[in-house]
Structures are given as C-alpha cells and as structure tokens.
Length: 181
Image (cartoon, rainbow, N blue to C red):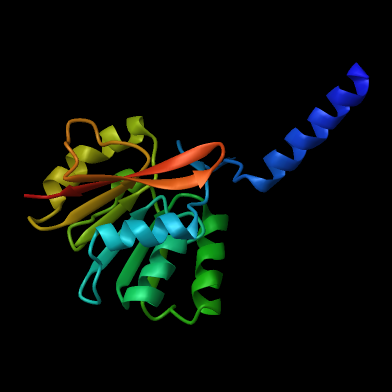
C-alpha cells in the first residue's frame, strides 16, 4: 500500500510541476519565469499605461509584457533581454500578434541600458538585481515615470501601491508600483 501511495504522490507531483511555470536560467543572473497574462494586465493597469507611454521591460523574456502593452493600450515598448533565443522568440511573438511596429526587442544586459526615454519600466527580477538597477533608474528616469515590479521590491524604495493577485495554489503574486518624483 505504501508503494502505491508513493507512486500516486510521485505522479501527482509530476503533474503539478508540469502545470507550473518552471524557471529557465538564461545567460544572465536571473531565471526566466513567464509572467501570467492576468498579472501582466494588472501590472499595466496599475501603471496607468496609455498610448503616449514608452515602456521598457528589463528582462523581457518572451516579450509578453511589451506585446500586451501594445495590443491592449497601443503603447510603444522596448524589451531588454540578455538571452538571444528569448529575444528571437519575443520578436516572432510580436510579429504573430501584429504589433511589431510598436515593439522592439534587444539583446542587452539590463544593467547597461539607457532607460531615460521610458515613462514606465517593468521588472520581474530578483531583489539583488533590482538593487543593482536602482541607481540606474534613479539617475535616468524623469519625474512622473512609473516602475512596476512583479513580486520583488526595489531596495530603498517604498512602493506607492502594492497589490496581491491570486495565482495558483503554490504562489500568489505581488505587484509593487513606484512613482518617480
């Protein structure tokens, strides 16, 4: 009976893991974990994205945030991703969704990017990486710009707004909005 229960538990765990987003390590310091579309939508809504915005997604992965901002709000966006395979996937996704005219994806290290034209910056980076980004964002972003972070704070910044978004049984999501003053 114990062997049967262990086998059943093993099959259950395998099914759960296959249904969850599994992190994929990229060439950089941060794993690629896809952001669910419901979380993306809430991030863009909290940031009050409009067609006048220029969004920079640092660590853009497969491009879902930039593509969704173009589709839903008509915003122009730039995805910065260190993994060339993910950039090619994002470009193909933008073409398939017919928003390539509003999107740009670059193979670049997020710590070397000039974000001074951004009105919105989106992040799904680990806290240590956000801490490295903070001086760049402090120096380059203009007053009124919004930084929206999925799950992780930016050390030394106090969020202007925080929301929880229900996820699966393993993980609820936290969205933090920071407004540059």
